[in-house]
Amino acid sequence: MAIRTQFENSVDIGGFCTLTNTYCLLAHSASDYYRVFENELSDHIPLVYTSIAGTRIVGRMTVGNRKGLLLPSTTTDQEMMHIRNSLPDSVVVQRVEERLSALGNCIAVNDYVALVHPDLDRETQEILGDVLGVEVFRQTIAGEMLVGSYCVLSNNGGIVHPKTSVEDLDELSSLTQVPIVAGTVNRGSNVLGAGMVVNDWTAFTGVDTTATEIAVMESIFKLQDKTTGSTVDFNSITNQFIDEKA
Image (cartoon, rainbow, N blue to C red; front, side, top):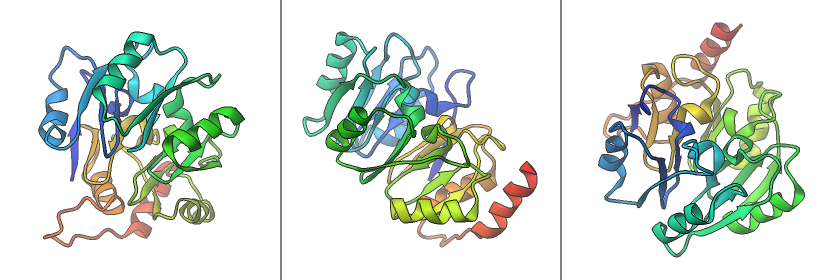
């Protein structure tokens, strides 16, 4: 299921969290937002409270999957050691020298495929493929180069910018080998990467996210309660998003 939460006064929870099938990075906070993550995840994967380069926007600065985690070169030695010591031994942690240092904004990834900013360094692309064990494609989403901001992937599906054309949706689905749908979070926001995080069994999204947006998430990421057998008409909802944005 998809769970609504917020980071202090921000609904952009994806800016402060990186979630995979084997770990979850969370920013330090004076509020109790982390209890929502603990209640859902602590029995399954480690939760790591950290900063990146002294900032709390860990979700926008890092990118990872069940096999590895990439950190920007600005990550301090202390932060990197803390993260390495907190994660399972099977997870490879590596810093990368990359001009586009907000890695989470520039890369959308699951356990098999990564979509990356067209201007990402070749060396970073190679490290990404090696450390995370993924096939890498340079891509834009609805003409936007920040693919990590406008696309969220899991191994079950993906949600992209609401103005993505039908042809682009088909191309993205072919590249990633998972179903892709256009959608929004937080009552119409197209910055999906900032508004939500997802793995193969749960998702967290901002408190402003509507019931329709939640329904799209739970269906495309296969998170809905199996006993309800609920389904979503993606064509009608996609048309609704397009009409609202037109």
